[in-house]
Image (cartoon, rainbow, N blue to C red):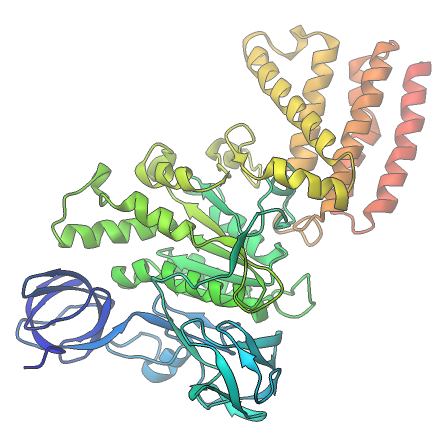
Length: 579
């Protein structure tokens, strides 16, 4: 028997032990008579431990195992966007055509359509010198211009032939120093793609969510975690970020989520209109659906599949937002595989290398200067965490907090009060806020940071007063503090609260976000002034202009609405002071 072939020695769930092979770590192998896909994860003497990405029921000792002698890789090229894959980059639509509604074992399909032809427009000429990562040409696809790059693992050299015209992704379009280059690349999922230089995260990822853009902004190329208990709105928050963030490309990984939640995403995204382009949002999205009833080992791979696809678009000079929902399910998959390997468990049964695996994943985020493209590209990673019972002290949440810069803590108490997004403004933080404040000052308004600080002070004071109210009641407070409580409520209800299902309020531009807060603070200033001049708190709270402020959220013509509310405020405060 050759080194590339062996036979099954033992089967333990998704872990199969083979003997008689001489593989390398992370080699992809075909297991059993059905040729199930697996990956080498441990080698001990003559025994090879294989993580099988499909159901192993019925597989038995003695069946053959064949080594492909290649690492687990994804196929990259035009045709990626708009696709829906499983965790191994098998297109679900192609699998459905082959096997029906249930994926049969051993089935496979190419990650991109190998037959479809694209019009290749070269950007290099014969005799020109090119290097790895350089743009060789472009093809027009449904979502715009797709750059064809010289793959990073190829050596540069002189362009010998250029083939302009209509080709499929496997045909040669350029020849460089005897190397044939097609529009299709392959890249190992566990290896980060190389870049020219790492850049500072100085540009915000505009999310359209007021609580995030205002209080806890995320930089392009940054990392964020959204931990929260069941029902606190993690998935809706991530879907809002996917729909409205100003990234060029969205990679959404449903990693171990319930099938009905993933179904909503799969049904909704093809119908959603893209606020940036007016087309369908699916045209700039890659969806990876690896639900909780799919094989657990493929769940572990799905995270790497998604981030490798994200890096490919980053190398074209594009900004990519990657949503991983959820990394807790990914960690659970690692825990199960680790237990099958009989490794020494760490805290709560998770493998001892949980922290390094999480760090390895989040470190693939970043804003970079790509190898051969002038424009900077970025991968921003936003990972949902589902701590059991909302316990943020559990290992996945704690180890995630060590490596991410932004922490958006979802609060079950806020969710029960129907306050969404239920991001707790006391527990959350942003490691990019100071660096990004200059951008917002320059691009939106010079008062941006001053207003945000005033809002923080109001929320802090409101929190302190709420504790006092629980002891002595609101009526026992001095007038000024009662007014502060009302202003705190305005900030929470009119600014921080946002309706993800309202046609207008689901997205708030930075300019609109600034003006809503400015209007609330303007109302607060005039109310404090009126109070000092003898007005009653009850009269101030009853003013129509107070509740009118909230209408600005739901209006497309918010500039006109602001002017209308300001005029009303001026009238009402004058009347209150006169009385």
